[in-house]
Length: 358
Length: 277
Image 1 (cartoon, rainbow over the protein chains, first blue to last red):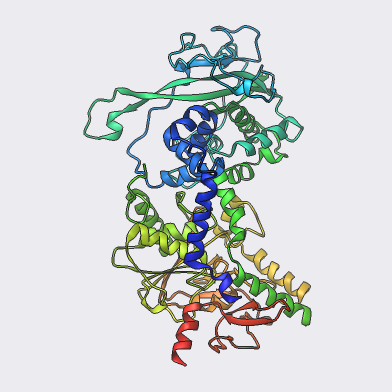
Image 2: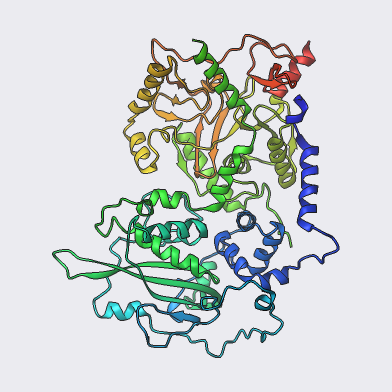
């Protein structure tokens, strides 16, 4: 009775003990090691890092184990960890032109300068379930220094720009880039902030929204101009971190595995200008091609208003798209409904009974 | 590989940022101030706004009380109190009068608050106009123009449809006769406790990234009409445990036949009254 709903301390402890037991499963099975998850569930690790906004493979792998493979929960763990960390500087803008590309394709041209390069992809595999497919014992060890990887590949979009076929983004951009993790977001948002929101938005959510644009809800006629995946150098100016340093030269501190997608979209024409293609952009840490492509579709859809289109579809409504894409926020608020609401429900009960009896 | 945690979890830059937002909020009673909300180790919807506000205002000398639905011993209240005990080591209490900071979800304690106390409310939807206009761009404009007619119309429509204002909790209030504010989902029973309170009232909405405040001794008026004045909930019976007839009561179903009992939602006030009698 009364005590049952007032669980308190012991109930929480008992529940946590059960959770631990379910996480561990059969103790006769060896426990998962962080290294195993990091190495063998790499794409899951990439997603958790990207949406968790902490680019640390070991922490992401730990989060996946702790969350029993629930990636949205793992993302949440990593974000919560992020809130305890002090920010001590920022990097120079990443130059994806300099990416050492492990994969690089274009769907617009049969042959492109620098060549098409499949890299590690399941695109042309047969999805037949079976251990022979998944068993990596026969595979040759991954060679991080891929001899075929190429840096400084020319960009397909630059080639189209040079011909005057691709429009430049028209929206005014702030002089210093916004940071959605340090400043509260306000609508309407500049594209730079929108892209940040999209880059850490839930992959499934972006996929559904991007898909909706392909089915007539805010159509954009997309073509994959270029997808590239590879290592991009990360540079900092030491003067940005320590103001007493005089030297302004960027120093390379490492590299990031990134996936980038440039979509070339339907052309735009008005009486003043000749028609030009428009573009959508997707960039995400790790190997996350589905996400980068969906992000590029949604980025283009959100430019509808600035390109003079009349917004009509959900994907074109920035407050709708951006306010609901964060899975840590969404998961929390949906699930908070299971917290006790008896005070408010009591208030509603009294109200409904009152209206019924009057 | 657990990282070393700062006092009250958040790093100092973040706490400073929240305090700045709170100062602005106190200077503009009822006005929603955006802040760069962080992810806390509890999910959004569990009170992350309140937790961040509490984390920003707590000092080592503070005594913290946490309630959910009025009770100190509901799981969420226990969990949040544990979180602050773990990350600050400060003293906690269940006694309203002893607390310097009280974090709450959905209630204001029955025991009158005093000067120097801080109430921290957990807020799911800080925008009182959200159910009338979902877009923040538009509601910001409505606040700027004090375009609050649509809210009054909504209350009027309630009366024409139901014969009464059909809002029983999160009942909109006008702060300092200037800004329309959501009091958070407290039952309207608690609204009068906001008016001219000697305590500082801070409101935190983590997912929506807003804080707002009612400074001590500020007018807080629940919206109503001259011929349909604001009223709070009353019950025909008293608390089955302590006998109080002036506390907010929760309904408990006590057997399979559906027998109901009414008991205090505020466990501290209920205990105090039992001790007296």
